Structure formats: structure tokens, C-alpha cells
Length: 244
Ligand code: C5P
Image (cartoon, rainbow, N blue to C red):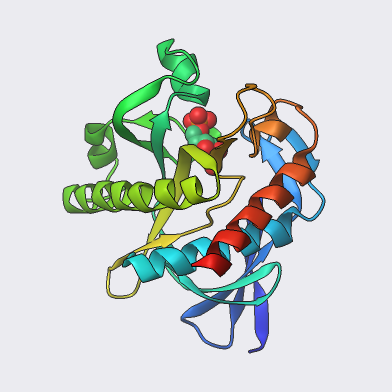
């Protein structure tokens, strides 16, 4: 496969076109940003770790019956993916209150939600990725009502599977962000990545609120040992996948 030109450079990945117009190559970077890129840094080895974790999770989700953009991973920090039109939405699923949910509602961090909460945010850096209502989403024509329903169902199914998977890793899935895209047949595919950059992951065996954090909050909140935490997440994923 020959790589053509750079199609898009995001905060964590670079996308290249390939000789097949249906296939893109995603290059995972070590760069880390937070708070709409106001905080910038680098996490050594993050590209390889996140690509490896995402690869395993996409494979597992495909086996579970979820359609994703994943094709294969030709090297540790590269993933071949189906070319899709990304919907400008960040779909967040929450099982436990943390982050912006606590800041915006006053719920205490760690409050277990009675049922998973699915939220849609407008993927728009200039506007600061605002939380959308269903009506605003339809008003802005960011997706159709059918697509919103389908994505909500997919997000809940993915949460069901991932919660169980992370539990096998002795990790509690607090919340996570998904992105979806449309292929040439208008099929909805899970896209982007699933990694400690996009999930809140708490070590189930650790009660200390800082020590239990195994995700990007270590970078956001300057908790230290970011690389070690990401590496530990990867090791646990690989262990569970090998046992399966
Ligand atoms: O900040 P907030 O609490 O809304 O984040 C919810 C979840 O979505 C977290 O797991 C966070 O890592 C993820 N997220 C993300 N990319 C964003 C915003 C949030 O991966 N731009």
C-alpha cells in the first residue's frame, strides 16, 4: 500500500490518503492536548499505545457485531481505516459522574448513574464543542432523527460491551467519547479511536481518587505517571485479549 498525501492533521492523529480511495492511513501521535488545546504536551509512546489499545477494542467490537472503520494495523502506531464522512458530533456515554457533567450539574464525582447517559456535543473548536440538545442537533442538520436514534442505540450497545470488557481488565469505565462516520452507502460506522485519551478509566482495585485514574485526566490534572498509566492499560487489555 503506498501512502499518498496528508489529508488531515488532528490533535492526536494524522490521516493520509492511500492508493485505494476507500482506505485511509491513520498515524497516531504522541502529542497531547486538553481543554480545547489550551493545554499542550506530549506523552511518550502514546501514539503506539493508543493505536494498539484501539486496534484491540475495534477488533473486539467487530466480533460483538458493531461496524467500525477499522481495517488493520500495519505498524504499532498506524491503523488502516475505511474512508468515512465523519459526523461533526462527539457522542459521550457516561456511567459514573465525572468531568464536565459534575462541573455543569453539581453532581458529586463518582456518583453512579441509574442508567447510562448519552450526550451529543458539537465538534467545533471555535464554539468550544458545546453540549447539544436533540432539537439543536436537528436544527443544525448535523444528523437526521433516524441517525440520532441509531447512534444512541449503537452508543449504548458499545457501552454495554466495553463496560464488561474493561471490567475484565479490573478497570471501571466511567465515561467515554465516540465519533461516527458515514460510508459511501450511508452506513453508520464507529470511527476515530477508543483509548485512555477518550475514556475515563479507573483502576477498580484502587480507592484513592487520584491513584485510581488511568486515563488522560492524569495529563489534564497534572497527576503525574501518565505514560505508566497508559502502558498499564495496554498490558491489561493484551492480557484479557490473549485469555479470550
Ligand atoms: O470533559 P467531559 O467530562 O465532557 O468528557 C467526557 C468523556 O469524553 C471523557 O472520557 C473524555 O476523555 C472524553 N472526551 C474526549 N474528547 C473531547 C471531550 C471529551 O475524548 N473533546
